[in-house]
Image (cartoon, rainbow, N blue to C red; front, side, top):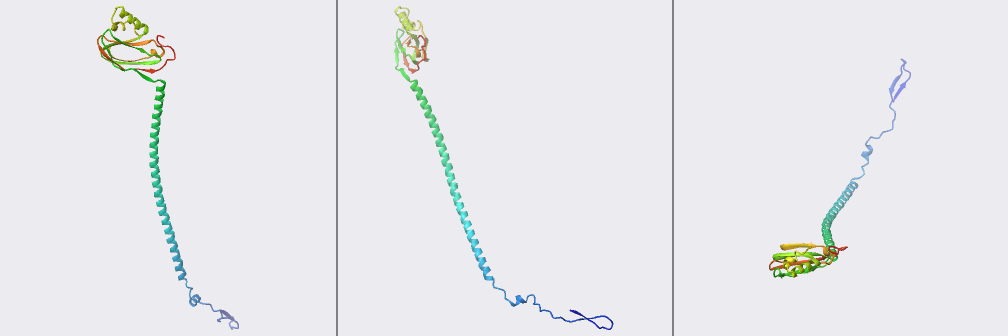
Length: 242
């Protein structure tokens, strides 16, 4: 601290330095040097151990959870694959069932059609024509479609006649104008097949009329193998000669 001293002869002030009392200041590190630091190492070690233990537990739980998720995912994938396989199998079964149902419907329709229009065999026994004076004749039933099918071992003549035409043919034979092979095929016919070995024809005029017959003749001895059948098919009104 500087103090000015008066009374100098030259009028100047004498400045002298007088030491002043100041409060003692502690050294900056005196406290740290005098007081030992508190022991903190053990708590830090305990905290780190607990932290590592918690971390290990968390990692273990996470890995366990991931393992469970993986196993569960594998199980679900297996179940999904099995479900896809079952679905494909069911789809095939459905297609099979639909096909079977369609076939059954077709069969039902066919049976319904057969019930509405049943077919019956009429003549299928082989018959022999011994010559030009012989003939085979049969009526064509009404309300039916007449399926004329036959073969022969030699040339034959087949005609569909009305009753009047058949009567005219018999009269021709009785009058001596010709044999049965000629008269029954040249005295008027509805339909004729001359000098043939087979015939196949569906005749419809009897579906609404009971007035026809079929006649087989031959110029020489032959055996006729018929396969004649009819299908019930009544016409809504009269047909042919009726």
